[in-house]
Every structure is written in C-alpha cells, then in structure tokens.
Image 1 (spheres, chains in turn cyan, green):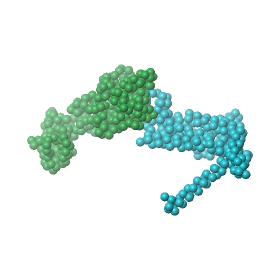
Image 2 (cartoon, each protein chain N blue to C red):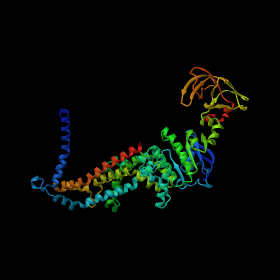
Image 3 (tube, each protein chain N blue to C red):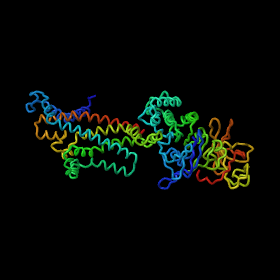
Image 4 (cartoon, chains in turn purple, red):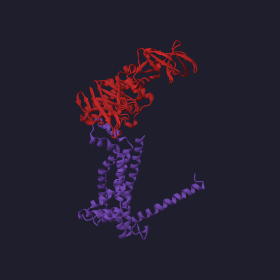
Length: 267
Length: 345
C-alpha cells in the first residue's frame, strides 16, 4: 500500500501538516501543567497553575457561561419566531430582512462594538452591566440561529403541515408549539450549539465592550497572556480548550444531523 | 350534515377570477366529487369550504344551516385529506391520528379508545406505532384519511387524495377509499382531475371548468346526458362529429347519419364505444391504425369527419390498416349539444 513514492509523499505531507498544527498545541498544554517551563519537564508536572487560573479567573469563566446561556435564550426567543416568519412569508421583503439580520456578520466586531458604545455608552448602568456585552453577542450570533432554523423550515412543506393541523382544530399558537418547533428541532439544536460556542469564544466585540468587572473567558485569556507568567497563560488556554472542544464536537454532530434531516424532508 | 353553498366566488389579488359565483347543495352522507382540469377552481372551492381560503364578500357556507363563513379553519370541524397528506413527521401514526382529538381536549383514555377504533377501521393496526417516514404511499394515504376522520368532523374534504400514488396503486385504493367513505357514512367532497376516480367513488359529480360548475349529476347522468360540449368531452372523451346538421340529418364528409331528433344549430358528438364497424353502415372510412388491447381493439378511422375518429371494436378480428370500411353510429348514440361552452374544452 505504501510502496509508491507518491503515496509516501502524501503521508509525509499529511504528517508534517498535523505536526505543524499539533505540536504548538501540545506544547502549550504541556506548559500549562509544567512546574517551571523554562527548566522544562524535568521540573515536574503540576496542576498548580490550573488551580491558580481558577482562583484568578473563575468569575470570567462563570460570566462567559452565563453570557452564553443568556445569549442562547435571547436568540431562541427572537430567532426561532423570526425564522418562522421568514419561512412563512417568502418574498422580497423577507429576503431583505434576512440580509439585514445577517449584516453583523459582515461588519467587523470592533466596528459593531464602537457603534454600540456610541449609541449606549452614556447609559451608565447599562454600559457597566454584562447586559451590554450580551447585546453585542446577540447581534453577532442571531444570524446563525435564524439561518440554521430557516434552512430546516424551508426544506419542508410548512404551510401544508400547518394547514393540516389547523383543519384538526389547532390554533396558531398550538401549531407553532406542536408542529413548527418539533419539526425545526434539528435546526434549533444546530443553531443553539453554534450560538453558545461563538458566544463563549467571542473576543473582538467583547474586548471593546468589557469593563474590568465584566471580563469574559477570552478577554481574561488576553489579559493573562499580557500580564501573567507563561505557565498560567498556558493553563488558561487548557481550560479554554476543555470548555470549547466538546461544544465544537457537539456542533458538528448537530449540524450534520440537521442537514441530513433537511435533505430527507426535501425528498 | 347537509352543506349549502351560495354565491361562493374567489378573485385573487390581481384580478384573476379563480371561482365564479357558485352555489351547491350537498345532502347529509352524500359523496360528491369536484371534477375538472387543473385551474378550473375545484381546489379553490374545496379550500374555501375548509376555511383555508376566504371567498369574496357575500358568500354563504352553511353546515346544517349554521353559517360558518366567518369561522376560522380550526373552528369549522372539517376533516381534510391533503394531496401531499401533510402528515406530521414528528409524530408516529397514532400521534397523527389522535392529534385532532387532543385538540378537542378529550380525556386521554377516550382519545386512545377512539384512535384504536379508527386504526381498526382503516386496517392500520400493524403500523400504529411506526414513524411516518417508514410508511409507504398507500399507508400514508390511509393514515391521512384516518387522521381527518378521527375527530368526527362534520364534513370530510379530500384534495386529490390518490394523485400522489402510482397508477396501479391508485386504481386499487380507489375502491378501498370508496368503501371506507361509505362505511364512515359521512358527507364528503373530494377533488380530482381523474374522471374514472370521480365516477368510481362519488354519488354525484360536479364537473367544473373555468371557475364554475358546468354540470352536476350522478355519474350515469353526466355520461349519458351531458349538457355541454365540455362535459361530454371531459367525461367519457366524446369526439366531435364536425358536419352540417339539417333538421334530423347529420351530413359528414364520410356520409350521412340519422339523428334521433332535430338538432339545428347544435353540435354533434359521439363516443368511441358507439362507433361501430358495420358492413351495412352509411359511413365510409379508412383504417389508420389498429391497436389490440386484449378485450377489444382501438381503431382510428379517417375520412368520416375532419379529425380522426376512434372506435372501440370488440370481436375476434379487426380490419387491417389501410382498408376501407363501412361504419355506423346509432341515432340515439349521437349527443347533440349546444356549442357555447366549446372554448372551455
């Protein structure tokens, strides 16, 4: 199997690329659990730095989790009905609205943050509260929720399904709860995981919007890189990894499931 | 339940008149078919009865005397079978059938009992707990019917219920559907473009064209006594006998036929089964093609009238292509109809 030189070359390139990506990661992870990075692994392995990160940045971690969940709640409440409205009324107005919702994706996070600061910066209570960052996160993640739900809804004959439910005595609210939401679930799930992952990892916007009291996980990461010793920064990266990788994997799984469902419904 | 429709019309934004003012009366337990080509307004009429579309102002829809025109669809208590079935993919068969009963807030035990009853009636026992995605087309059709019937609607409305199935299955399920509807004993209206389907299932058929009911009657009446050229063509594929009518004679390029009654100013039609190869016949024709169809031959004849005429010929042998044959048509088999509706065909 590995006899031909072309195959060998392929294997070599693959391994080098993997090494290029994995070695720094591995090194960073190791740095986070090494007693003294400059003396190397001979100084011994320790969980001291991770404990220290926890002591220093637990608030940031909790804030990030809280923000991600709040962001999820808001995008669910706004995004699912919005996607439903767009799916039920296809047309030029809907297309324009959809583009409009997606606009924050095209605008750099910094510009979006600046706009928010200019507009709401003078509302002191709001400016200083985590709700200010939440606003930014919602703006940034909403299009992902809307598009994810919309693509699943568009793949099925929603109008006829609803008509079917209506002839059986279901009013508009019941139809939404019994028919629309369950059938949109794969899209909602994929959208939800995307929103949570993006919110936890969001840096651009958050860095502009945060105050010393509203520091999130990635902002704390930048802070630790700038002002802490390398071992703590590396341990922080490790913590961040442990939080984000399972989310990313779940996201992959959910969106694969959503697109499988959509293509099945389209048959 | 008796259904009375008065002055039902539908004009779409933009001015297209999908349905001209239509009135119709349907007796309790009667099965009526709305038959017509696509775009004739049959589905629009059905959807207006269901409440899925709003008629133009001035319409009256009476269910047993009660005017339901202002009621939204969910309050009308209609059962509807959609062309695509519209089964809920998020519920198994049982959940679909029970959904209407759940909306009526019946106790769980009663819902279960009634769902079981309908499942048995529609012979769906083996599939009761399957997801919709695991059912065949014919099974879905039966689940859709069961779901529409389970909440005991006042009227059952079926929109092309068999058209999503392949031809063989369609013919098979036609009889099954007719039997089930009779068993339900419910007033039902079903829309179809297939005349065989309409004839096989319905007590009465309303033939529609261009947004209005051209004729309503029993299948026999429509077939034997069509009132317009459109009905004659659409039901039983009557062919025009283009010629000159003089009192009780029809003068055709291929000969002269006797008519049963004077028919000045009308148009003559005949059906393929009434065109006979007959050595004594008054018409002369050339045999263009002969197709053997098992029980009979389909012979295409030219020279009798402008368009070729089809004849269904039963017998052990048929004339050969290119032969000249004599043809007869019995006077009572010739349909003489006013041609006013001709453009609709």
